[in-house]
Length: 497
Image 1 (cartoon, rainbow, N blue to C red):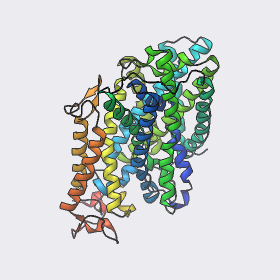
Image 2: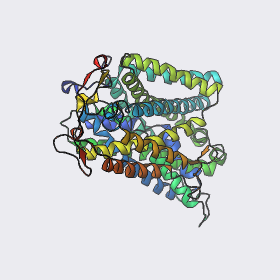
Image 3: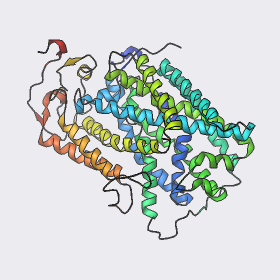
Image 4: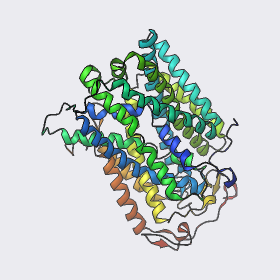
């Protein structure tokens, strides 16, 4: 298996042999894990009944998948990752917003995957063979996951795809095996803890749906990392379908989490206490002895899938912001820092609870960025200048996407305003509540607010302050006007006085 050498430069057509099914495997594999099961348990933690939880899960998944799917189109079109493609809408320098968001998201979800999978592995081994639960054993488990993930990411896309081909099937079979493990204890009529007509019902229902929705959204900055190996001639409908269905398929781990959480709430209620939930502990408490081995395998396989999809994008983006680093060097550097963060955050600073809040805030900021990318694609009719997108990476200046000294203030303003306002509306009781978080009766409406403001403000700015005609290509703009503003030629940075 050869080590991947490509960074964020445009992948040559001759080397783009991936298929939409490969995108499906990577996106689904990255979410077919214990971390998703934990999210699936939230409807029960919020007091919903089983069927109310199913409804909230389906709603969140479908809406989230619809938001995510268009972000898969940039990779095949431009042959690079989504952060670089965002140069077209945020400017040559403004693209660092996408790189920064994906960097933070990757580190957060890499940490969550290592912690949750490590805890499940140690807990399962404790129940199975009496392994002592101590900082040492947890540390060994975390190190095992982290180093394995780093090795896969160093080798790159092909090795990661190979791992996920195995992981998707294996983890899915192990989740399905859970049907036999828990069939005798499962009661689909579980009524939840909210009484009929409880004023907390809608806040709980919407909150649960938004938590599910946040899972697909978290992949927005990464889809281009994987889809850039898909040939540009591939029908867009197939690429869209692969991204959409990869998230719909996560109904499996979501349902595993929802179903087992309803059993935990009945048989081991202390583990679903909203003040201190412990889903992994509860799962081990209700599992029959023969299912401990599958639990450990899910932890190992799931940790590898989520960790590789997160850390691979981190190294790729870091190498794009600092081109002197190769992809391999950047991956090792960021991977090492992430591993240090995992150990310090778990054993020295006790950040395991706050990192989930941090991840939620990152996603709240990422969603408006995704809207700007989608609307930019729509107004540009899907036309991009692949050479002009690479200006930052080549340390050049000028081109179609130079705008004002490398910044497109229209996209930057729309993103910044919508992200800030969305954070003000965040409502995570006991963790983070923004100044406007209680305006909707306790419902966390930060994501819908961020999405709506980004869409309206960006289109208004494009209409009021037209972009140069050359950014739209031969067919011209859609929905907005263009201005006859000259575009500076691309030149080497050292030639600019």
